[in-house]
Length: 340
Length: 133
Image: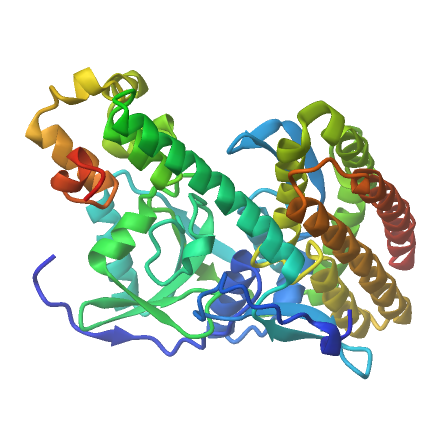
């Protein structure tokens, strides 16, 4: 693209958030004068989850996750708030870029999925082939796209070629130029209903999925696995496997302790919206559970540091996971009862 | 966790590009975010993951030097990719990339193909054929 475009800069108020999906939604909605914090988007979209899938491996290591699959939080939040989003994928990269320019001309800030590996402004230790990162483009100035990346403190810039490259990253969850923008904003939003639906769904996910890899049962399942790691895998590999759990738990965007603290923040806001003091009490209980997850990370950090010798800490880590599972089970039961 | 306990253990993982918001409880018992530069246990597990990557890169490098594999194998590791991912960036079948991992087949690649590989790995053709550069 050599022809110079006219500069466009929408009045987009960028705010940093912990997690990209919540952050992009929260930033987009602010443009339409709907002020929802990151924890609110996260809670309404039922972002808290747990899964451990030993057969699903990334880089040869089983995947543990503290959140649902990418895109789900976004979908649920939009549905529960009654906001309609237009979504598109494009088979031709040039078309995807034209569609973006078209949107900007119409004054529509546009969210999109990108791969992080080629994001020029990202810190190197975090650059790997993860393809479900969310950004919002809100302008074009001197042939640079203005990018609101929720994890960055300030808006960033990308050239046409740089943006095209990350929009067409390849691999798992390849974005294929996917972009989305708000189409219809309802005049009145039923915030209370959305909050309740969000909480109910999370309780259901954590307590009742009848497959032992998900929810609190998934934590118990993981505990069993972790206990066996050193004998089954040897010191080095066992350390990698356990380290991966903590990487998922403390990944950029979780806000600490596998989203448990962020969910606590949501419960505090929800307690005001629903005028329900019980939720505030529960937020403190979840903060304590979060502290237990952090303790698990401390033990794992030690295991990984001494990774060349077999270690008895695996039992300690596995025991702690069982404690966490019991605490979370009782927590989500109380949470479920508190809103009915 | 209290806001005052949010760790600030810098291992240069964020390279000063931003700080990460960590949710924690302030003195009044309200959740709020505190920007953090890092936390030791997390730095530890990330370092371990990168150590593994670097080990694989080093191993691939030796294999290239000893003539066991073509430079493509080295750049695959260096870019944390695998054969499948390279194939989809190249727009060719996986088995062809596998074929090009053999030095004998790599030598026969046309300049155009070398250029395409170089583009995927963000390097020049000279760097592709000579990994020491």
